[in-house]
Image 1 (cartoon, protein in one colour):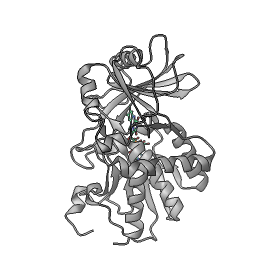
Image 2: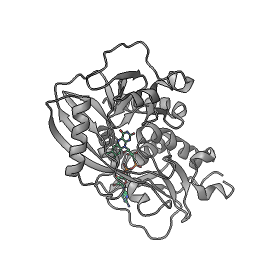
Image 3: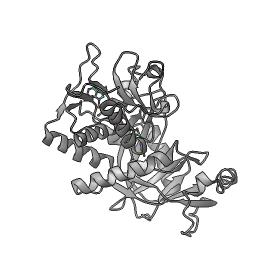
Length: 334
Ligand SMILES: Cc1cc2nc3c(=O)[nH]c(=O)nc-3n(C[C@H](O)[C@H](O)[C@H](O)COP(=O)(O)OP(=O)(O)OC[C@H]3O[C@@H](n4cnc5c(N)ncnc54)[C@H](O)[C@@H]3O)c2cc1C
């Protein structure tokens, strides 16, 4: 199914989803306008971390092999184009605090899908407070704020960005809603599992060689003796307000991963747009709106390729694999 290419598309939201899609459209010469309320969104808060093996279970991220190189390429090329460093590759030190935790990690080290992300070349002492560690390759962080700022300026220069709230009336088949958690909380795609998260930025004299993951959180050196530390998960109070409880929890993580002596210079909160299976989706919802959402906790990894797939679908009629398609579109011929 090839779409009508004469209509200008209207992308709602300039977070990771809307920005990657807008850049795809610009690249392909597809007419569009992007509208963003300019009041925040989770991309501005996010740490932009890409960590190939994640969670308590030390699992490869969903389809990491399909998404990783596209994401890194996209952010590196964008950085070159705008002459700013957006993607910061950095090895990840995954730490275990207890024997039980180490057993879980070590039991997976021989699996081919895990082994390919291990960096066997580096030999480092395990930091105090932890019993073992492994070093991973393929990690790094996207400077999400700078990414939003340079692309926002570019969209403004191209005359394709409006700042304001999109007002909704009738469903419009030329709108593509990239509204993040704000959209999911309006029940755009039925039930969701959006989660609030808090992050602090600290100044400290710590080593800047590794992203550290352990103690239920992570610590990312972002240069000039600054480190971002996170994060919390909260499913009930879905607002963007930093809390004392969040600060206490992340301060604990910072002490364990970094050490003593640090000064908190920023404390922020945002809402992750999470769907049932924690996987991103594209397509039309039951109300007939095009949607690109569900980037979850891993927007940096998934946004670039999902945006390219949506552009292929809309422009060239190339239907994506059903895993990426919104449920209500699976039942109708695409
Ligand atoms: C604390 C925290 C830490 C995170 N850490 C990481 C991490 O380390 N790595 C990672 O990959 N991901 C991380 N994430 C997740 C990441 O932030 C998201 O996956 C991603 O940013 C979602 O992008 P989005 O474009 O879907 O939504 P958003 O970034 O929320 O963008 C949506 C935009 O749409 C605008 N909007 C909404 N409705 C309207 C409307 N009606 N009219 C106009 N504008 C509208 C909003 O203002 C916003 O600008 C984190 C998230 C949080 C909260």
